[in-house]
Image (tube, rainbow, N blue to C red; front, side, top):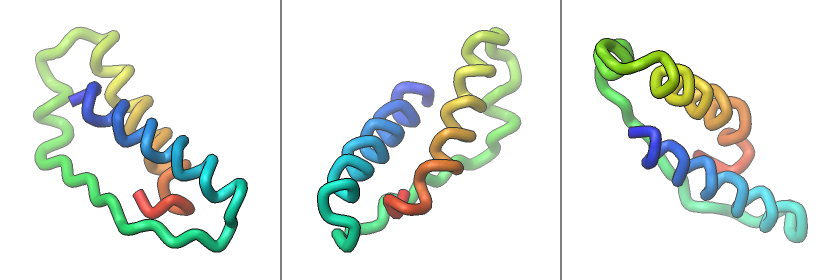
Length: 68
């Protein structure tokens, strides 16, 4: 899961670079669906769990402008 979220964060960063050069650029939406977030976080070690929620937070904060 963290690998997929890391990829989404890379997409956001790439899109931010594009927006820097062309603020009016329109992206297709990228939708992330995570079912049972708390169930995913249960039973994994603290490091992985913390990384998971950190990635989610970054995507939530940065993704809106880049349509993620």
